[in-house]
Length: 335
Image (cartoon, rainbow, N blue to C red; front, side, top):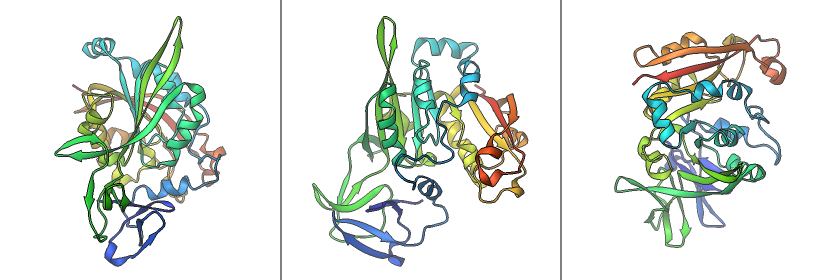
């Protein structure tokens, strides 16, 4: 398990502290300079967001994903008992690896309570700034800490006169309580999206967990967001599965499954191409056979909604001359 020590340049991975060069600097935060460990899943995305202010990484869409708006009615359709449950309360939707996507606001304005998961801090700040004009209000982060098995707002403190190596989710610094380890991750950004629904103005919650998707559990969701059951009615996966190395896919699906109610639906967007022709993915190629393997008939139903030529060939130089197919797939968890 990796952990983070915050330094002047943002988050740096704290690999074995004894093997690194430990330095102190203004602010009394300790940074461990060391080689990044192979399992650092977030490093690529930190690099992707290391761009000039005002610029966006290539995977960020400037508008709502067209496959989401086109097939939203299928994502919202809930047959039988689950439909009645949705009518009785606020339907909830999860967006893993969400970045600062416009889909978050769009789904909120469709009458849903929205929760995203994002591992990088920068898009959270940009999302708050950019979406204020679209109804986002009071969007601010809170550190959450695990205290006696319960997630609570606030930072735990463990005094330590000397740096004793990395600790998961903590930063070593001099703070209000003195020198030691302060909980600094995960954080939960909470806000509301206001929409004019004549003749009244309505507000729906929009929360984003700033942390590693692989560490998200139903208890974290239940105790830190508005989704008190810890499980969602639906999920939209446009850039999650295709962003992960193939070796991580099974674990990702397991984590996602734990966060979904029986009868929940996933609108999944994938891309397929000849993997050997593209250097340095993501996005990774995810064929339909792989989707069906990940979501087997025993626990899921898988329905292909649409497939079309991908625009990656025009937008991404590394895909130049590589035919690619984009698919929208509806996946339902059996109850």
